[in-house]
Image (cartoon, rainbow, N blue to C red; front, side):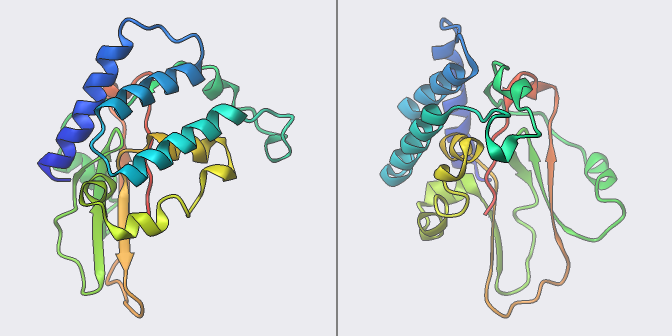
Length: 208
């Protein structure tokens, strides 16, 4: 992720913290809405994406979190998530090469590392012809056609509360494009790490 994309994410998170400091949300849904409104106020994202995010948040607020009365969630309670007041994720610390290697399990992979939902390493590695790996934050900054075609189409907000919330809040993730008839020389490994700065936050990533 480049410096410009990183600064946009950090600026939105900082503004969210400032605006939310004097407002104690009464519910988890209100907490998400407050953080969304703060990020939206500071957003420099393309207009189509901002509108898609607003629509997704409205979809999430209409239905709320699923309960065990919902058929798809009949045997799973999401109450620990639904009842928790979680705020927007914060920037994490640096991750050493030793830690990354430990999670590589001795394998030779194309590894992209995320800390608290933000890409921190692996995006600049050489890839085979026909393969590109970028970050969602970078593609948003570029206003890429790939995002316009797929971001709200794959796992659309209407498919469920978590999909809607993720569409509204996700700021980063991996965007992998593999051209037709292309063969990868080795697997792509997306490594997601959460450090102490992630406590009491909701890390929202979207991979394409």
